Length: 251
Image (cartoon, rainbow, N blue to C red; front, side, top):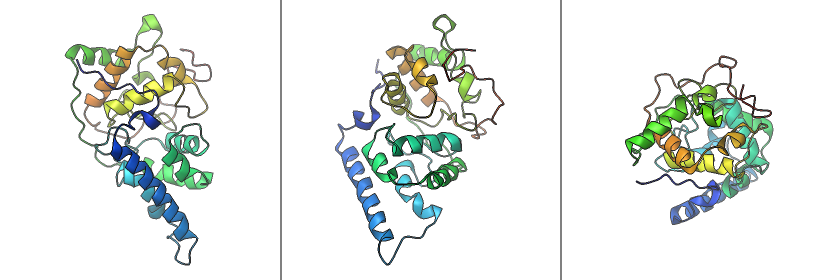
């Protein structure tokens, strides 16, 4: 059985591929060129279209995601979630050199505008490859996603990310339209503390209870699901969350 790559540090887990290194270099060059042009007598237009150009190079023209395993879909995710991640990259809580470099000197208002832009996009979901796992693995993933594991005090993914798994406003992300390797990498990075974002420790506490097999199953199952009929996140306050977040205790 082929397992999903559970990398504990997404920033370097895919460094085995030369094209990843070239992409990182290209992003840095783009940022340098943007800075140079803005400092010249021919500055770039100060518009949202110009601001998101560095984002769309990796995440798709409308943030819809691409075939690359490790560059996630941004479109339609709650604005608060996207903003928190941009802040985390800018302030060094999440470490990925191209993102850290691009965001290093951007003000909060600028990042809020970028987050709002991608949150408003309703572009089609990408076609994802079928996970190469057994039916038993997918069944375990479905169990954890929709029912959790009471014996281990693991709530269902849907208990916080919504019944349709499209997230909850203002800051809980949707889980659909993402490659299994990306989901696995993020769960692993959260478990080992190399992904830190936002004020709460909900996911860190939860992921420490997951085994490698659990992460493989959840990642594979989520990536196998079709696009939702309504990709919009659930309204704020519409779901009683399974975790209190501040202490990551189950309600």
